[in-house]
Length: 297
Length: 173
Image (cartoon, rainbow over all chains, first blue to last red; front, top):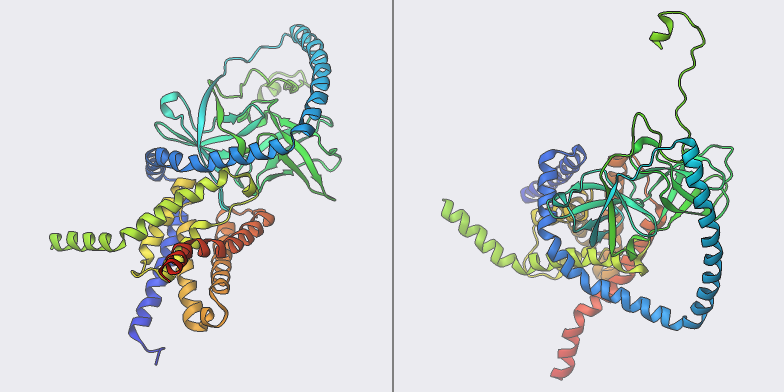
């Protein structure tokens, strides 16, 4: 009796149509249409103040939790800090010496300084997590000079890159998002690789040479390959080494960030210059000194 | 005819205003959970719990179109691929009807088991669509954490919602 019910049949067709509608929405989302992008940035801009207002209690709660945590560990923390100050004084002395050496070496190599970038700092309005996307909304947009693709950093290191820009707000694709990929190099062993987000809290190291043997806690930095990110920005540390796959823990924890800076001013690739820290491009060797042949190359 | 249509929309809005406001508010509350470091790995889907409870307890039935609309809004606000949360919210309703009518689970085993089944099925289908759309496998640990924390938080939310009712019952006696 239930099978032949016409309203049941209608319901089934209606549900199938709605599932199709959702699939069409996914396809539209993947197509990244200009109209959708504009509507999205307008709505994000419009709801940003509400979102910021509703986020305030959670932010305050987090500060209280942090305060309680640190209050219980004050003595231990004090000892650790004293130890850290001693260590940092040594590091500071060493780095001053190394800095002066580096300036001299740069002069010798005739290296071109690349300080034509400037920072635009914005407050974090909201963090959107879940298992589908990891993004962050900041209160600086087109009016402040932000453009799509620009890298975002904090005092701890790289945070992500701008994926959409509204007039007053911008959305940052965090490094932990599954769509995020950054070229890096291992600072101790020097091997280049790519880190990819997994929508979790660790990044996966990909395309690493089979000869490379990263050490635990090894610092990784951006390599500057591809020109999307400037070289030498701290990304994180290798924390988990299984048999064949390596993971990276971020230096800049997105949940603790209140302010971030967008690197603006120029792109990080140039046909003439090579990024700092990377070997200069080699000119093609002219093996044959025959007229016409070298022109083809 | 236009006037009739406008009136219909107005009546519909009047009837659904409570549900709309609640879902809308919880969209933002869901986003604010990301600031809490206890949910560093992943966050529980508070919005899914609220939709589930509204679908079961609200006097006015929440339409599928409304759920899809809120999914789109949530996707835009969070920067997720468009349609992901629409599909998730719609599947919550679809699986809720399916499990409740066909198997009458809530009567036999209780609301928590029903929610577990509905949420697990909906998340599984949505994740499969996500993998097909992105061609990438997300972190399994984060998904399991999300699933576990959502299922654990469900009785707590249920209790908090029932708390005023329990309090007034006690005071009334």
